[in-house]
Image 1 (tube, rainbow, N blue to C red):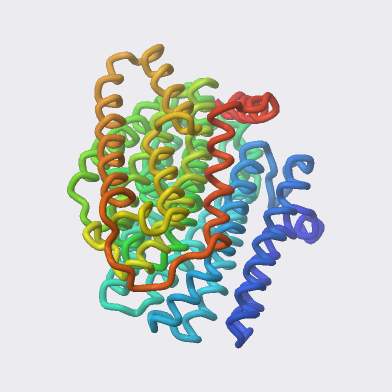
Image 2: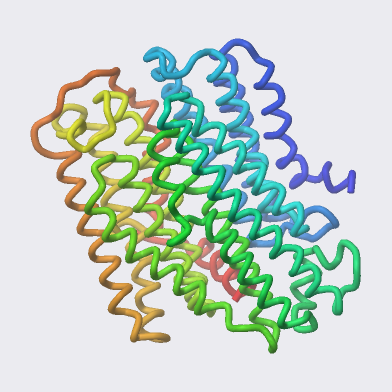
Length: 484
């Protein structure tokens, strides 16, 4: 086990947690910001350079194509958000919304959140996965409450209580899954191991496997923001520091869907288990429809994009529920591109809210006229997340629609309604935010360097929409083929 912790995957998990301990003790905020950036960048580069070639399963860690992909994506968003955070928290401090103690806690909790997310993705033990997701949730809750306003504290408590109920359900499901695996693997660590469960799934006890799936789907579905388990998300996005919105949209949601995808594979191999696809599809389609229509009633910019995240999470879950290599391919592609796009949007929205001194739609307008770079970047992000060409989310949504027509054509009407209504709402808000007469400025304008992470994200989404390299297609196809 010690040797596993010293492996590249183990060091990548330990590095952010060690950085969190260091940042908790660093008194100078300028140094802390650079340590945060350096630690996040080191984890991202180490994962990208080593993890795809370090596949294997150990007692503690499991590195397969799915885990490697999700870990690289999470660390990349962590790296760019750490860079974005440097200027963002400086403005928050100048405005008096964060004090020196709050800044130190912010940087330490950021690294703790990143480290526990990577541990959840790379763990080869169901119990460790559960503990890591719970620890990451607590770190995120504390960050949401950092502004110490009444609304932020209320949002943090709502986040904690609702996700606490979800994680309690997931704990019960984990215990039942262990009991289901006992006839095939016997007592001990193998019955808690993802790598051992996969080949032995056919010999697991079907009735217990079904019960475990129900509790785990509800528990981790809460983390994924799937309707009707989504109520924590709009408040957490609206009241917490904007960088936490960027990483929440691409971390906790993705990790929860990652676990659900692994569970789907287990049930698909057991003849006595229920078909896992329909329940996942129901939650996904309900999320798409509820979020799409809810977008029209939102007056707060950050709440608006939180509901957009619920919609996009629903699209990915719907694709995973459909099953099959092509649908899993589409779902993974959609999850990846949405993560990059939504992080870019929240980075732009965060600076726009600081610039205009509010986060209501009436406070923010005419960004292209007054701050061209910020306005154009935000407009590009909204076009991308609406699923419009030439960005990659058009491709992923098109693939999901094609698979739906081919496999379950009766569902294309509700799915199409959700996608069209959501895209229409996004287009309407693009006009409100980026066009028309500009609203007054009440804060500092973002520099070009502050927008660089958003440009990097959107450039990747644009390239994958225009011309997806064969190596990327092969990578996604390999993951889809392994988990279908």
